[in-house]
Image (cartoon, rainbow, N blue to C red):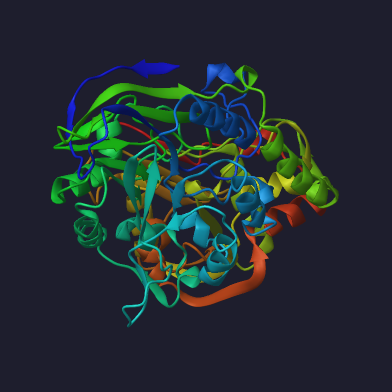
Length: 517
């Protein structure tokens, strides 16, 4: 548990003559469909489970019983993670969220993972306000989701809540095939517009943004919070009249609020690991607020009794999906884990499977951020594989010259969105301390240096192929072939079903590694 009590002034408050009172703001972001509690090696040494939507619901409902003026917000990316989201295209997640006492939520990039038409279908089922005010149909002034903000009132307190998506995060991480015909526009411009519209109508303003900088998107307790949330800090500096900015995308929790002028910037880690609670002492006569208390609470599952209503919906969906997901497809003698700045055993398995599924390819590359769950030692089920790679990103093969491959590796070395995981026979070494453009110090295929002028047949996925995650050199690819309807989880399932064994020595190869020269 992390707890910090602070006292700072927040210039805010408008037309009301109610006496001073407490207002509680509870918030999450990047829940990523982790509806069940789970264990992580970097939380309590993997000995205690964390999270779970039913536990979050219990916490929120208890807090709302304590104080009528309690609000629960989420800053997006509640879709995509365990198979319960992918197999239902998010429908199960909305059903579960409808039981959790949300007061408002914004939209993250992963809500678009199954196409924007599906986004509209699923979000329309929500029984709470979902907000998004800067995504438009192209060549028009028509909002994709026509609800940019809402005004909520509890116990005489009015809060104006705005939902927005960062342009960079949208363009960088929403697959181009899933956002055809829509576009995100300047979040700062629209934030200020909506703040101006709310001026004089509310006592507190809140923005739910999905725009953090995904430096090492892994929720491993990165202490460099200000760097990870720099985009949000810059946004807060550029607008007037914003009291609270709750942000997502960076997967980095704020151990205390970041004070930017008169704005507080707040965030949690991903996957429901923790939950934020801000209590404001609101003095409406003097038109200002101050922080009474703040807590970023680790949500240990053994400390909570799951909310019955939420758990019932989770159980119902699990029952519907159980027959499909429990099918065994293989087994592994070792736990297969993810990594962001180097090769991972899970990344090695996936790229080797991609190479097997594309017989004409010489090498396979996939993004570290696309791998979302580890595989425990023992039997591997279909559900396990889908949870590890829950995206509908199709296997794509192309020709790339050696220079383009080197450019891809240079972007890998920046760690903006993590390294590319790579298939057997490929080796890359990088030095982050070298100047940009010189960070790749070794790049070989089967022991031979990659030659800039030579052409290589490369297997990747349909998210990376158009330049996703900033890997723009993929755009240079020629003779592209997309295996329609065949995504990376399919490749792994086929690889295992065909009898390919997981060999510890092979999956544990350090194909990508940082060195210092």
